[in-house]
Length: 226
Image (tube, rainbow, N blue to C red):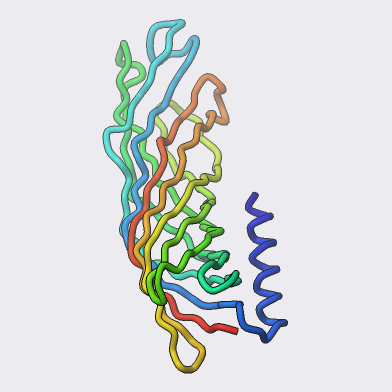
């Protein structure tokens, strides 16, 4: 899916630069806000040393991982009529979460310990549509995909691979055209990403589940209409 999204973005950028016609918008944005990774858990199934054998143990996260961020992005979009537009927004930088601790509990002391997990979110890409409610006010909805790079230290040993999360974004914004053909926008939005489950690379009886992530903030954009 990520390759398809990037191919669409490249196609739109190529079209925008090759065609000097009305209906194509290109620009850059700065987005600031808070990104929160929801609580998660580690699960061990079958025979293991962390509890009764056989038996299942679930070790829940005791806190969320959260971080404030300021990131930049580039976007290109095509207008469809007077009120509707579709576009692609791409963030070329990563967002780093704080370190989250998972306190482990089990039926004996052999599995006691603390897991630490830090997550990087990379290649955040959004396909979106906007609907103009007035000459200036618009609504936005989109599909989001982001790569998740996990950096963990686990008391139970092993490690977990990286993955991708997808979800949606909704927003409301103010658009103002300038006499030069440029425009400025101010937008508030909310992003909701689904969770994922990963299996330990060294032990298939162990898996970790992230419940998802949310992001909310304000975006300032400047662009040019062709």
